[in-house]
Amino acid sequence: MFENMDKHLYNTNTNVLTEAEQLWEKCLNIIKDNVAYSTYQTWFVPIKAVGLNDNVITLQVPSQFFYEWLEEHYVELLGKTIKRVLGRVGRLEYRIMMESSSNKHNPATMNISGSAYPKQSKDSNFIDISLKRSDPHDIKTPYAIPGLKRVQIDPQLNSNYVFDNYVEGDCNRVARSAGIHVAQKPGATSFNPLVVYGGVGWGKTHLVQAIGNDVRRLHPNKSVLYVSAEKFINQFIDHSKNNEVNDFIHFYQLIDVLIMDDIHLFVTAPKTQDVFFAIFNHLHQSGKQIILTSDTAPRDLEGMQERLLSRFRWGLNADIQAPDFDTRKAILQVKMRQEGLEISDEVVRYVAYNIQSNVRELEGALIALYAQATLNKKEIDIDLAKRVMKNFVKTAAREMTIENIQKLVCDYYHVSYDRLLTKTRKRDVVLARQITMYFAKKFTKQSLKTIGDHFGGFDHTTVIHSCQTVENLMETDMEYKENIIEIQQKVQLASA
Image (tube, rainbow, N blue to C red; front, side, top):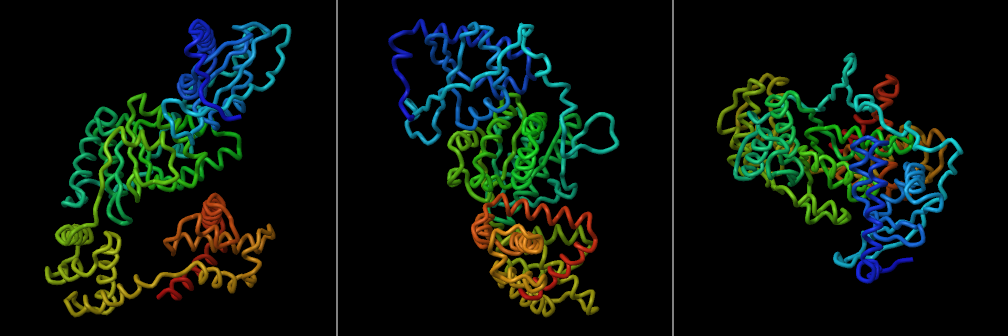
């Protein structure tokens, strides 16, 4: 049952509390010798002993997730340790801090008795040494570079994203300067974490990957990893299903510079927030650099745990604004140099003036202009620019809806629209549903939750899993890939 902190533990009997702390210190000394250092720091250091009564030690843990994790993975270790320190009659009770509490000085808590621990055998005088983790390089990693004897992490960076081609303007000057500073001294500046936020297509991903590439150039011995929040969530789900969350956490705790893109997606994934909190704490305490991006300012991330938001404020929150006219013009000129294009200043100014939304549309317009000039064997002049821009803006303005995509896929696979919205597991319906979710995410701006709602109430994890399944099958099944390409052409034609 919910209750406020028992003040008598702190006020009426200080000796009891001190004794509890001393006994827990003895327990920690034993635990430290039986788990990896990162495990010890993540799952045992945050625990506080808050009471001792009739050989029952009360341990305060930060959250419900923390309690569940201890009970699932370390119940035997805790049980044996407590019995060794307190004797056979020793027992454990948890006090869980409730995250919903608004009173930080006297937070709400919930007391839960510990599980019944496995009985010790007669010969069991010590904790099973097999609980100790092996060498960190034995940890499974989804980013290992194949063919190397020693595990090296593939940073997942785009080598084209560097500072040299990241155009500086009033819209991004602070974020860019902070990024250069971080790249020079990762983990050793006050910009940790560095949180870059701003609208879609304003250059966040380019900037943070430029930081990662510069770190690799300046500090070749440091491990760098770029990962989207969506992929991180998907990995967590997969590792949870395979009972490998421990390996998942330990792997991310090995990274020197972690770059996480689109953390606003965490707001609908509370369990993932718990795991990321553990990873964040370990990295920050170890002096590792954390770089995050979000479409929304951290203060506006409704659904994000307050403890995470407070940590995001430890470093620098740098916003990126929509590029102004001069910046848009400079971006086009950089892109022209990269592609070896020669376009008059009049045309460049016209494109920069008419596309004000984001960098991706700017680059898309330039590619469309070049393609039309090449196919029609015409010079890129202002008249061609006006025709291309008119078509480009018209196409960009029309957005495909989830309902239209559903109907297109249903027609292609001869599945009724009503069946698509049911939760049946029949293969033909599941196939159509997964592909429809994939294209809904690809061609609409709807959130994962909204997409799931359009299919009769599936959650965001189902949408993520469906998209990943489609991508995986496209890599292994050529016939399936050809079908996807054909459907995509129909979707694109319908939105033109």
